[in-house]
Image (cartoon, rainbow, N blue to C red; front, side):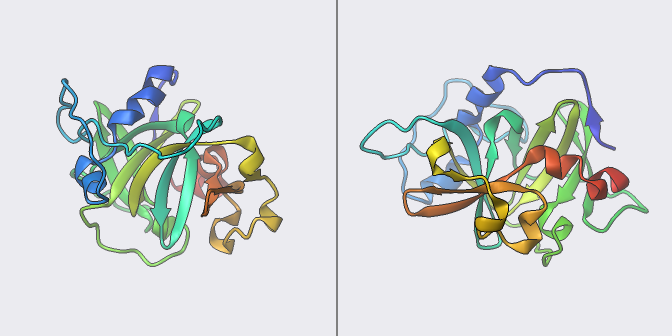
Length: 207
């Protein structure tokens, strides 16, 4: 039930994430946005959504998508993000792990939908307007992750990253899938390792 194909993630996909966060969510944070001339169809997040990062100097670093889970901010490398979607109709599947919500038609292909809260052993909450679906790709593996919300795309410089998970104050429930942490301004973020998550024994066994 996992989508597998031979497509490579292009730079345009990463750039396209500038058009994939919910405009209503961003506006609720008081950020003024410009509309795109090309509306996206169906369930894809409407364009022009990412808030601008207000900084005195240009920050140089690898791009990360920041999302929330519980009370934590989690960052995932943009190169592994195929898209950010609103939740559409998820088709339940019998005899699967309880943290698998079902499958979804993702732009013509079938992909498994994993509730990340439930996968990590946390309380499973009802979906709400800010709930988002991240389609995450590593090589030919694509899995959709349900997360509490998505906030922005930011560059994280290597100097801000602590790659030692044991010294990074990473919660135990996420430690097995983290590559470290980062401090950006006054914000503390956990860095999620997409490969560790998607190719973990737990994920591979049930998807």
